[in-house]
Every structure is written in C-alpha cells, then in structure tokens.
Image (cartoon, rainbow, N blue to C red):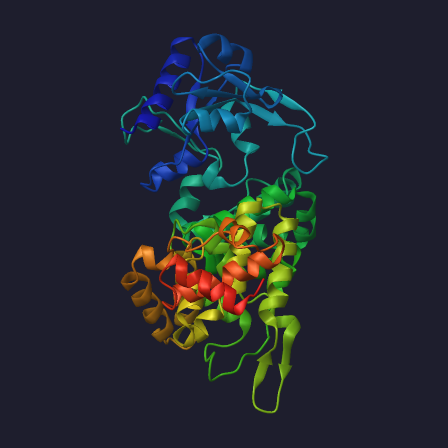
Length: 459
C-alpha cells in the first residue's frame, strides 16, 4: 500500500472510530478501479468541518464554507494558502469533505448555498461525472459487496468507457462551467467516449466557458497537453465547439492548406494534431505549449505564390500571437519566455547545417535546447519525416566540448576601458564580435582579441 493510500485509510479509520461515516471518494476511486495509482486521495464524510478539525491534530480549512478540510501527512507551517500547504507537505495531503448538497451556482463555479447532509447518496448526486461519483470503503476487503458505493452508475460507465454527467448535464455544467473542459480531458485521458446528451450539452453551453478564470482554463488545457493523449483532446475540443472559444487561434488552423512537397499530411490543423499525438505523457508544459503554438502564425500569413503556398513571416507573426495567448492565459514570465523561444526558433533547424560555428554554438546553447531539439524532431515526423537536421544538431551537440560551446571570455568591458575605450552601447557590439571570432577559433588569446579590437573597432 502506498504511503498516500495508507494515510487516507487511517483518516477513514479514525473518523469511523469517532462514529462518523467516511469513504474514499471521487477520482481516486475511479483510478483504483482502473488499476491506476491515484495522484491523490479524497475522503468524504458526514463529519462537519468543525468536527474534522477537532479530530485531527493539524488541519487546514481550505474551503470550510464548502465543507473541505485539508489533512497533511506530516506537520507543515500554519497560515499558508491551500496550494502552499500542498507544496510544504510535498503534495502529501488528503482533502476531507463533508457530505453535502449544493443549492445553486449563480457564478458558474461556487455554490450559493451548501447544505451538509448525512446521506452519501445526496453527496454523489452533486458531483460532476458518474465515473467520479463513486465512493469506496478502504477498510473492507476487496470484492466485498458493500465495498463500492455507486449511486450514479459509475461502475457501468467505467466499464463501457463513457463520460456521462450525473443527472441533467446542462445543470451540472451550469454549476461549474469548467466541467465542460474536464469532460473533454477525461475522455481523452482514458480514451473514453462522451455520452451523447453530455456532448450536446457541451456544444450548447460552450460559450459559457468564458465565465471560467483564465488560470483554470490554462491548467485544464495544460493537463490535456501533457497527459499523453493531446491530439485526441484537441479533436474533442474542436467537435464540442470549445476550441473556438478557448483558443480561436488554433481553430483558425483548420482548412489552411500547406505545400504538399513539405507537408504531405495535410492542413495546419492536421499537422498540429499529428505533432500533439507524439507528445508523451509527462511532457514538459513548455514543450507541449510550444508544440501547440509553433505554427500559430500560419493562418494569417497564408498566401498562394506562383511557385507554391507560402507563409512569409509566419514565425514573427506567430511569436506575437503566442505572446498574446500566453498573456491571456496568464503564464509565468519564465514559461512564456521558453515557449516563445520554441516558436521563434523552430524554423532555424532548416539552415542548421549551413550555420557558421559561432551561430551554431549560440543556437545549441539556447536554454533548454533539448526542448528545441525535440520540437524539431516531432515537427519533422509529423510532416516530411526527414531528420537530417535533427541528427546533425544532435551530433554537434554531443561532439562539442562544453568549454568550446561556452568558452571563458577572452576580454571584458574592463579590458576595453583600460585600453582607452569610452563605456557605452558600442561595448556590446565589440564584445559580441570578439566572442564570435573566439567561437569560430580565430581568436585564442587575450592579446589576439585586443589586437582584433584595435584593428576592427578603433577607439
């Protein structure tokens, strides 16, 4: 038994000893029935938040008004946010939620009123999808008849591979509009189908997704991109009409033809889906978003020239468009910088074999260059299939010693000042020219560098 499962089981056992009902609930039950290790464990109980906090020595009421209390595996600092608590506890926390029924959701996310209940059946009815609406008694042996509490048909849908909203799908999505994206993510992640009534409700309510915060949308999309079935997720986003709402720039790729000699696979959307299909589960967030956005500049730059279809300036346009998307979804500065670098540099591999040594070495030492390399590989495999540039870059990367890739500078600004040069913007150009000559092997000493400067950049 994993440490997380053992901790959650002890919470259930403790609550039971105090006379309360308590079960594993939600996604962890689904994952256990699928023979997957849950990312975390949730416990549902008839104990009120106040009672839970009295029973356990250290707890955090991260959503007390909604009946949610966080119980860490080990002591953490007080006065932290729920996310900080999870980080401080190394992710080893269990959410303990009181059985409840929600009255209404006027803001499309939070219930206007929460009524605690003693009936687990009521609690199951307010959850999102049948496969997430089951409860499990961890204290009973496997195959015990009462081990699984299933009031919503979750086991049947799990076996049939169906994502089905509990009760009226329009009501479930009105309660939390993010559930529409979650339906897509679960269908892609488990390779399930979406129940027709649930699917139709998503299509009808897709514009409501704008009521959800950009941060929550970003996190769902990121999970879709990094859980191993990104292509399927984006196909479903398209057919459910959510794609044009959350990422209209990606929806615009549909039907944008490409030159068949370079892209026999089809239009820009098809190419992007093929690339996403090759992203493995656990791919980094920045690589995944770079893969999605690398050709975002093609639709607005499409033109048919006499010789072939062209996308003049699509990289520059794409960087600007990607920057706006990342700003809209509120990515961090560091993530934005790396994703934009991937978009900005993805076409440079086309000339990598013709780069001089200084340009090549600067290219190969880009931050997180392994992501640039992987994006190029996936890009090629999703189009013409040629990996010559990829293999060349790999060979150069592995055959160039670190000291040759990033040599110690031969001179600094202080050397220029001592030689009589006036500090200013010119220093940057001089030092860059010296570095290029050094990378190309034309300058090997400080003396040679200073001679080069005096000759090419007279004071």
